[in-house]
Length: 313
Ligand code: NAD
Image 1: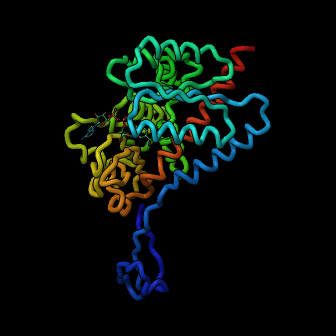
Image 2: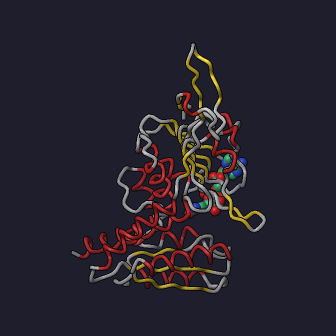
Image 3: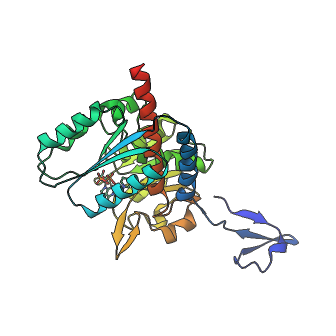
């Protein structure tokens, strides 16, 4: 963000402006603080909207949450999803399955959920234990119930610009960028991370909005050289402090998807405290992408119910 020029009345400002003497009237240059994108607030607004909409519906959107094993992080995510689902007035079924469950038993459960008319969305929390083929399980979810947007059909639809159910985190990222009023078209966007569930879908969505997109990953040489050119920087890696202030272009929109636990605290991939001085807009962790992802999952569940109603007509 370019520094704003203000007049001499700001003399003595606590922000310690830089004094520039031009002819007779002094002007002061103040570096504007970057704007922190409040993902929680935006998510709450969306969830309240969903709550009012669902209140008057005869049939409620139904979400099945499947948790396999006892991964503590997965348990926390599923707890949040279940809690939100109930708060907005959706129907919710949760399955806590033993970590030794067989692939066949899990496939049978998905198959049953595929048939149920009161379940519109099926979410299997990843990662799954080693004995289970994740691709096989995800692929067994009917595409119109794939509220995570991870099946090949959903990802294929996204790539062919026919997005139906899009991964919630990618939708969250786009929503947060758009909330800043940034016009994405023609901007240089750098996505750090190339996973199927975050990096690639985000890159596709930015491309669809006519950004010029670069995808960086673990083998990228000179990450800073790329990130410093980004008007929009999305980071989804899982490495605390990976992106420092020096790697952020002045005024950039920085979206931090990372969730890391450091000394009992949850932090992102961006060195937030310092990078916020360079960024024009930046998401905090927690309170940025996380709550928005859950809000987008709820929207996807409602959409899945609408899809089912169309299919059954
Ligand atoms: P992943 O492990 O599947 O992918 C990580 C990516 O980072 C890979 O593509 C890898 O190439 C890249 N990478 C690794 N080291 C790198 C480096 N030094 N420089 C550049 N790239 C590097 O992870 P994921 O599932 O995409 O998740 C990424 C992060 O986002 C994790 O911290 C995860 O917990 C978080 N996440 C958050 C949400 C949310 O709702 N906020 C949702 C999903 C994932």
